[in-house]
Amino acid sequence: MAAINVKGFGGLAPRTSPNLLAPNQATVAENVNLYSGEIKPFYQPETLQTFPLTGDIQTLYLYNNTYWLTWNQAVDVVLNPLATDPLQRLYFTSATDVPRVTNLSLVSVPGDPNIYPNSSYILGVPRPTTPLKASATGVGGSGMARYVIYLYTFVTVWGEEGPPVATISNQVESLSGSEVDLTGFPSAAPTGYSNIVTCRIYRSEAGNTTNTWLWVADIPIGTTSYADLVPDTTLVDNDVFMPSQEWLPPPSNLQGLVSHPGGFLVGFSGNGIWCSVPYQCHAWPEAYNYTIPQQIVGLAVFWDMVVVLTDGYPYIFEGASPSVLQKTKFPERQPCVSKRSIITCEMGVAFASPDGVYMITNALNEFITPGSLITHDVFTRDDWVAYNPQEMHAVIMDRRYYGFYKTGVVNGITQGGAIVLDLLEPEAKLTELSMYPTAAFVQPSADQLYFACDLNGTNVLQEWEGASTRLLYTWTSKIFEVWPQNFAFGQVLADTSGGMTQAELTAALAVQAAQIAANTAMLPNLAGGAWGLNAFGTKAYGLNNFVRAPAGASDLNILNFTLTVDGTVQYSGAVTSSDPFPLPSGYVGREVTLGVSGNVPVKRMAIAGSTQELSSVVGQ
Image 1: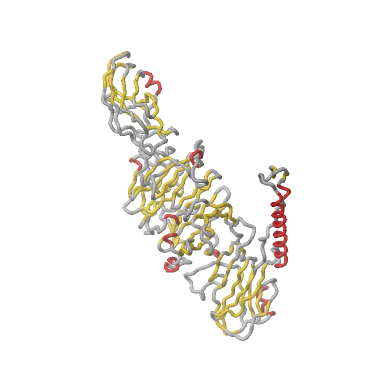
Image 2: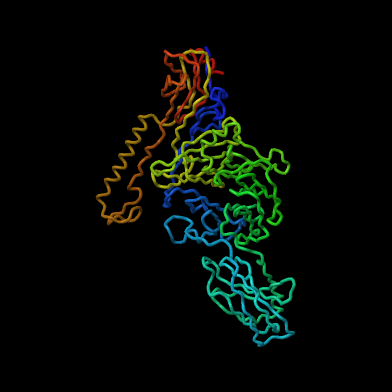
């Protein structure tokens, strides 16, 4: 009689028939940690706080290790590429708003309580629309007469400068240092640009073919005139030239914002790629605009490559500067079906395609495996479609791709699950999670994964594996084809130490309830006041007067073994030790699966026709 012995537990491969899987592969692998080859539980997510923002949170971002920024839509968020930026500026774009910028002082200004960011500015500085009028008074001055002309720009409270007014002022004849009166400055900042506080004035000599514009003065917004008395020598000595002649605001519909290691930001508008001036994230010159012939879905940056994912072929823009990016059409047609599925890791850029998860690597220039469908060995196209890739959002942590997929809405709460693709462990390549966060965020400095979830109608923040209690898992084997027989004994080698017995758990809950009751009984005798170390009426109650109730939700060891033969469950029972246990008689069958569920680590499981046979296979 043949025995079945399962060890070195592996993950899923839906594309392969359950009968043809490897002996250690699974037909069900949910909430299970297989990274060591054993079956181990994950710890439960811990709820850290609630969010006042209602509706599904689709973007979650931790700013300054303090503020959780939340949005009800897909938002692209990047920090200023200047690591020492004293303003700690943060830039973000979406499909429904103009590009925006915020910083630490704006994020937390008064507004909706705890909904961050509370305030932001429109990204970029617009071009002034009203030209200046110059009038020479003939007062003062020296030297030879010359003709001068003027331009001005807007400057923000952060010192960001925009492009000059499109129309040069009229030219006037005057001496160096002779008064020239300028009028036509706007009486207020452009609508929506409350951060613009200054007009910056530049002067040049008429007929100067190089358009050398030198700084004259800054005046506050609202000052509508200025008397220029600055001698030419002062302008030359100051040597301040206009830097922003080609600097434009980004397109109003810019989205997909990413940060390049060359110090510039990249976004897209329609089928155009736009880049900012390095370390001047408000400035987006027309010269740094590139187009491709397909509709762009999203962007990613890997090394010095901007990976442009479209509804057809991807494109690669490679280079260290926005002025010299080299465009290459990717050799394989792989559309991106979900912008939120795009991630960047050490190995490349991964995203949801119509066929599975595709990855573009750094070997593009050599055209040696520049990309691959990394799920080709686990999914067919039909298998993949069942995970609703068009609405998938993803993060990567520890080289594991977490792809969260939506299945529907029940009682107003979005339902779904997750695939976990391990990019390093082929045996545990694919598993699933039963939970569905509407948004996720990885904090690189702590190597920690956070979720935004709808918990009974309230949006909450959860830390993945942050709790002390274990998550229940389920693992079911392949279908083993055997000669028709009846297996007499089973054995599960598991670590059932630790945890609590049912009696211990009941006792702990009783202690918890008693302490809560004792604390509650003290309350009616108090005359009001403040909790904590402050006085309660005339009697002081410090924190030590109220004893903290012990936790009652400690782990209870759970492990269940299931034997299924020819599609019928023949045995299902609790496992409390690693000793062999009898299986029922009265059946024979050809197709056998073994399964375990619970929260206890499992090293192997086996079934056989006798204890001797079981001992021989388990000892292997």
